[in-house]
Image (cartoon, rainbow, N blue to C red):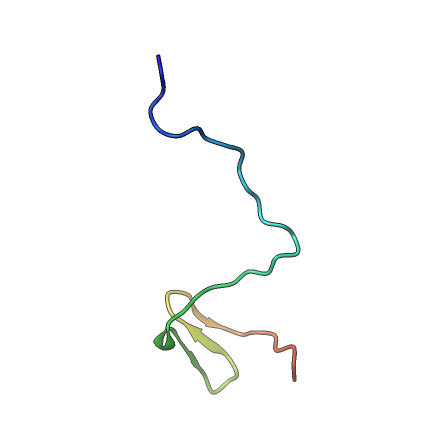
Length: 52
């Protein structure tokens, strides 16, 4: 008996050194007065700015 579909391989894990990222449209984010950033579907986050 043959199985339907393609053969399932091993899972691909991300490396520890890879940084998390997200893609947003131009309306998907905005700056707030207190230094936070509003992200669509996530809410307000307080980033750690590395170049200040």
